[in-house]
Length: 241
Image 1: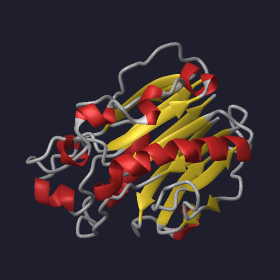
Image 2: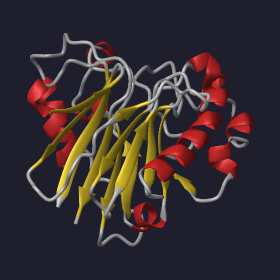
Image 3: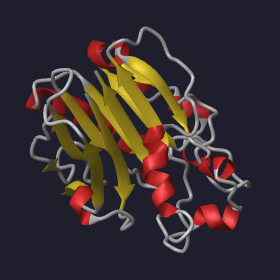
Image 4: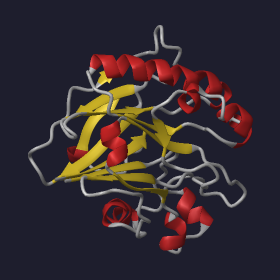
């Protein structure tokens, strides 16, 4: 079984027939050719009692046999506070969904001036056991040549997730599709980031770029839709069994 998903903060680029759920201003889009996976009812929280202002949504899937995705777009001025509060969100959703298999992901703004490396190393999601940051520090996830920041992150928790990890990386779509910076910025100011989980995986393998997953989404934008603006990050999650 393979499932494709993308996280698009407020982007109108794909038809509504592919929209799985809306959580606040964020939208989850996906496509699957299989019937043996399910999407639990998305839930929304305003961060009451959890210390998060970005209204993270919780999405549950009947894979692995269960998996919870928690997307979050942090506020740049409150990155450290919100990412530490994301640990409380993790505790809440893992109890709510009765699953330790959780993926935290999105535009964390977790680098450069928003979060220096020393403060990054002190986050609860770094010091508490069991969390695996699969987009490595130092990997650029921004389109502009003037920046080199690892803003967009994917964090895995749970033995099931981590044992199935096949690959994780940012995708430099301007380079692959020979776009100018101006053309690329009309699509997004961040690179997509992707993680692949595979039952046969035993170690991280390098991604072949562009993968079919990314091609299926990005080719639909070229060349006729380069004038559409989609600021934010794209996160792709592929499940294969």
